[in-house]
Image 1 (cartoon, rainbow, N blue to C red):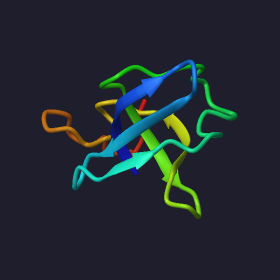
Image 2 (image 1 turned 135 degrees about the vertical axis):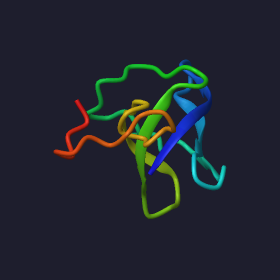
Image 3 (image 1 turned 180 degrees about the vertical axis):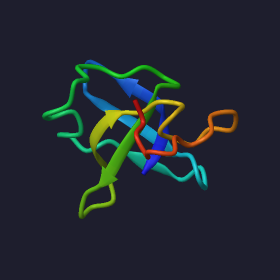
Image 4 (image 1 turned 30 degrees about the vertical axis):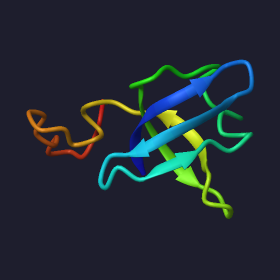
Amino acid sequence: MQGVIKSYDPGTSEGVVMRDTDRSEYDLSPHALTGSVFRMLRQGQRVVFDLDGDGRATRVRLGSEVDMGTPGFAPRPDGRTV
C-alpha cells in the first residue's frame, strides 16, 4: 500500500499512516521500521507499507512520486521506478 505519514512520535515510535487511495488511517506497528532505511519519520513523508495481522502498518519503505503513480509522472515503459 502507499500513503503518507500523518503523525509520528520518535520518542515512543508511535504514529499513523494514511493510505492514498481512500484516506484510511493505520497505526504503525511497534516494529514498523525494523529492517527499514528509516530511523524516524516526518509528517507528510510518502511511504509504501504493508499491514500486519492486527491491521497495523508494518514494513514501512521509502515511497516516491514516481512509484506512486502521481499525476504528471508517466509510467516508464520498462516498468522501472528509478
